[in-house]
Amino acid sequence: MTFFILASGLTLVFGVLRILNLAHGSLFMLGAYFSYQVTVWLGNFWFAILFAPLICAGIGVILERVLLRSVYNIDVHFQLLLTFGLILVLEDFAKFVWGVAYKTVSEPDLLKGIVPMLGTGYPRYNLFVILVGILVGIAVWLLLAKTRVGKMVRAASSDREMASGSGINVPRLYTLVFAFGAWLAGLAGVMAAPLRSITMDLGGRTIVEAFAVVVIGGLGSIPGALLGSIILGQLNAFGIVYLSRFEMAFMYILMAIVLLIRPRGLIVKEAV
Amino acid sequence: MKKRSSTKPHPLYLPTLYWLVMGVIVLLLAPLFLSEFHIVFVTEIYIMGLFALAFNLLFGYTGLLSFGHAAYFALGAYTTGLILIRVTPSIPLAFLVGFATATLAAWIIGFLCVRLDEIYFAMLTLAFGMMIHTVIWQWDSLTGGADGLVGIPRPHFLSIDLSSITAYYYFTLIVVGICAAILWIITRSPFGLTLKSIRENHERVEYLGLNMKRYRLIAFVISGFFSGVAGALFGPFEMAIAPETAFWTKSAEPVFMSLVGGMHIFLAPLAGAGIFMFLKEIISGYTEYWMFPLGAILIILVIFLRGGIIGFIHEKLLAIRGLD
Image (cartoon, rainbow over all chains, first blue to last red; front, side, top):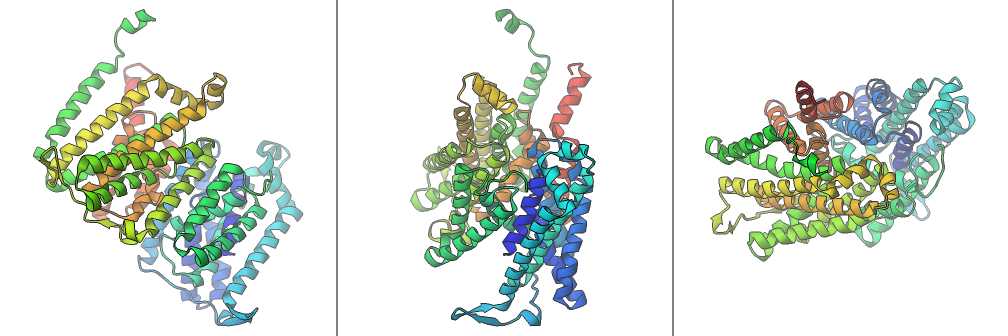
């Protein structure tokens, strides 16, 4: 489910801004580090959930305003390279602030322990993550489908000039969407923090997995991101059972097959 | 048509030839003046430079951004290394098998990838590259897994002992020189010009009745082959290979080099490799944070100087000579 949160941010940004953000994984990494920092300072994981994604969103605003804005109209290759440059910068930033040793965050006491379910046990924290994932999914859907801002976002994603012509402040909308994407990446980072150790190379490692999720479901489609993350979850689970050592390769094989047969993903949808 | 070709040579041509000859002489004499540390450093620039040149045939000339080129580099390196360690310490055999593996992989993967464009092409090459990385990472018994492949020998070749770094410097220089010359001829040939026209407008090329995908595939295979050559040189050079060689961030290095140098000038990626290695070396001499400045440079280049550093100088030179 952390993958769904991460991937929905990536796919939303691509759907609206038409930019494939390689640094999305780095924002995820920052989210995890911020959650560590906030937990250390305030001694409470709940504050981390509140603040860490907000800091990421703030960074998102700066990145969009200062950097991305100047590359919307140029070759996609350069956009990819710009965001790749960001990965390097953010990774060293994390190294500078938090050092090379890995960090860990523990889940709050309330979410520790195992819940007996269907004859077996399930960690309480994982259930919490699933719940948050579902809430995020519903919230994003409501936001896009039912609100005025959502309508403007959809308009801008299907025709930028037309939207701008009908009085929508498209640049501000882009900033907003990118910040929201960064917020989602940060939230995914916070959610993932207690589940794994936090290292600086988290950004580069996660982004390819997020790409796989997004590509399988369809670039720019939120339901696609959901479908992709469910398929990958299943694939990983089965891979571990049957062919443990090559389970990761499955993901890339599936990604390649989808790209070849249906380059636009399993769920084809024009707007977000 | 004939008349045209008999007119004066291009004004830039003679000086270029002059600089080329001078450059080769400098490179041949360089080991006499350099310390062992610097010879190692320059040798690595050649290898990475060849990798960047090979990559740029696809990127700068054909307009396809591959995010999985580390795969062919790594396949060349691993196969060569494995033959040298396990089968026989014979450079020609190991290199040939290394080239063949990289080329075969590029042919199969390229065959599938050339159908797609832009971001989808980049994503598909990324997927295949990561597949190969995963296999290398997990196949402990063959590749050494996470520890990598260690103890690759540098045997005799044509009765020359390559174990000294100076010998390996010349060996690398000759191989890279030959490869660069072949790549240069390719880019100047009608085939190379067709690639450029595919870059500019692939739909129009198809309307002209050319099989665009076949051209792309051939470019992909050539690019994979020379990446494999670079990898094959790299294995015995480092005497060890880490699985990170196949990771996707390694694929981004030739992208960086091509862009820093300038993707539309033939030798510029080689210069870009020099700049990249130099920056990395200098910066990591002062601080352990070498990625930050590199990333910042990349961002600045993308925003302000998309023709690359060498491309920028070239443009200024042309302007000075009134050849705008």
